[in-house]
Image (tube, rainbow, N blue to C red):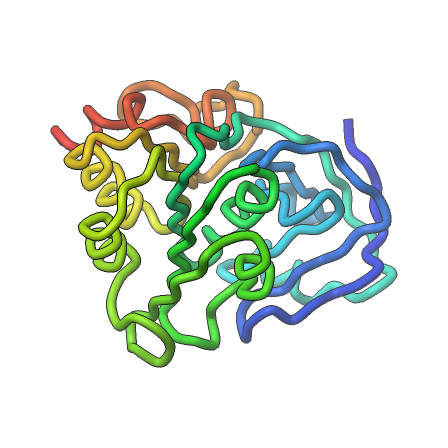
Length: 238
């Protein structure tokens, strides 16, 4: 069932990312997503950035049209769908790469725990939600080019942090190559991990099969948040 929503504010987060604030709110759990429909373009899945906003990177025809919308324009939203991040333990390491910061920041805000967040991007201009992360966690920043914080990848900083501290669990979202390494590192340290996977979704309810992983799980129906155990064999032994 679609909800027709009016855009009441648009925030330029980075040169390529905008947050669209809507006039309607949705009850969601951290990591869940909704399908957003635009006329003549069909629909795409996006993680909730808050109960009434979506943060969207400009990466293709659909998001290009989204970025051309103005305050007062309307979109159709259905959801929330999917699995979500659960709190395991009292000390948590959160790893967010690029727009993977969207579901991670909602989890960091929802959890009642001591959280360290590793926030990464290609450069300082692409970093998301610095203030939100700082408010609810100990924030460690890294950039590929070293323009702010640690120079290197999120997983490089993750390995450094795990040599100095112990954690009850790990949550992560970002590029798939990053998530594969996060799961491997978590497995090597015997730490439970949850990751939010991205796949092209067409239906959002597990019917079309477009978002199936190698083990048969569908990102839209069984995910997008998976445990390390669910993914370990296809990631570590592939």
